Structure formats: structure tokens, C-alpha cells
Length: 207
Image (cartoon, rainbow, N blue to C red; front, side):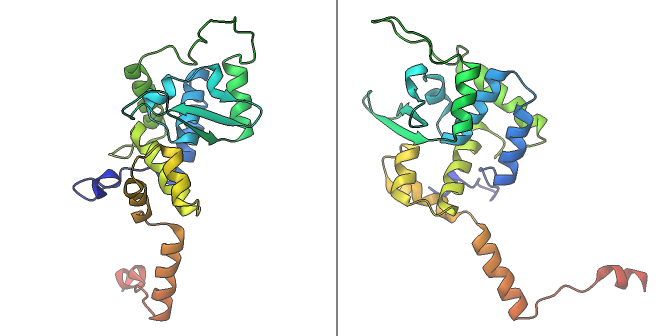
């Protein structure tokens, strides 16, 4: 299960918070529906197929939540709600013209009309524009980034499990294996306490 966030060669499969910021910054230079897709997947950790199934009814503008159908469940009709920034709700409302009247009995249109392959390619183009390459520079890397950043922000494990739609808590717990800033700071204190300091190689080269 550890292979979920690390490849066989030890390369991570998740974006760091800094890489996610670079990705979203690059997305602002693309089509507006590409921008909203990138933001929704980044802010909810949902799968591409789950994002593409969203309609106007999936956006709770009052409580600022996105309601996602868990498409990996054995049965349909299982939903999870994820709180998102108010600015994302405003962006979705503007770009996808939410708030219009949907006739009774009519099925609301999906927010994105393109296919899963097209969505994948658009996200990859944004990744390339942000100079992100490797195993982590994939749409799945955004989902993993959501899980890792949630755990490192001390969101309770059961809540992260619900937001990601995991059936097994052990799957969610894998994200705790990613190194966070607290772990890095602990290591830094250890280096200082033990006087672990690299020599100044520039001075050595000059001699």
C-alpha cells in the first residue's frame, strides 16, 4: 500500500504544497474551464471521473461545499461533501454560470462537457507549464497532495478518509508516511544538538 504515494524507486507520487501553488498559478493562464477543473481537483482531492460528474446541483453555494458522488463504491448514490474556499465557489458560479433556473424534471448539465481523456491532457499541460515532471506530475498527484497536506495540517484521519471517499482507514493512513515540516524541524534540531555541520567546500576548493 505504501506504493500509493511512493514509486518502486522511492520517487514520491504526490505534489508538495509549493508545487500545488505553482500548478494553480499556471492554471490561471489556461481556459477558464480548465482553471476551475484544476482548482476543484486540488481543493477536494476528487478523482477526474468524479469531477466530471459534477453538476450545478453538486455545488452548495450556501454552505460552500462540493458534494461528490463516490464513483469507486460498489453501488451508486453514495455521496461525500467537502468544504472548499468561498473564492472557489465564486469562481465556479462565475465561470459555469451557476444559479440559473433548471426546469422541473430536467437533469442539470454537467459543469465540464469534455471527456476524461481531454481532462487528463489539460491537467498535464498545466503541469508542464508549471515545470512539473515525474511520477507526481499527474492528476492523481493532486489527490495524493490533498491527502498529505490534510494529514500534515492535523485534520483528523477519519475526516480525511471521508473527504477522499476511502472505504478503508488504512488507505488514508498511508498519507501519514509523507515527510512533513514538523518532521523536518525535528531533524534540524537533531543536527544542531549533535553539531552536525558540513564543511565550507568553497573555502576548501579555494585552498
